[in-house]
Amino acid sequence: MSFETEFLDLMPHKVVVKSFSKYTTGGSSQGTYGAAVFTTAAATTYRGRMVVKNVKLTRPDGSEFSGSHVAWLATTRSITRRDKVTFSGTTYEILQVGIFPDDIGVHHTRLILV
Image (tube, rainbow, N blue to C red; front, side):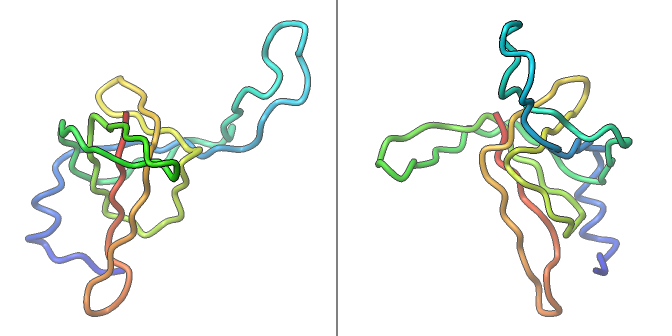
């Protein structure tokens, strides 16, 4: 993965991604059964661009919902909808992950967040 300097100039922010690990299987009496558990390893920080943008998405049943932010990250690492993103002290849920190529191959990742 190689980024041009001009492209990276468009990514002034630091966006933190914490990877999903598993769902809890214990603690049902405390109401925590099935809660998301994230890796205990350090979160990964990526160079990126975070913007406030209302993005409409459509569920498979045809109903619409919207995301509130879009993040472009200078990475091709596998990020899933179950991971979580933190930017400027606020944690976001990932609604959609997009991987975009250039003429050489996979180039960057776009996340729709809420």
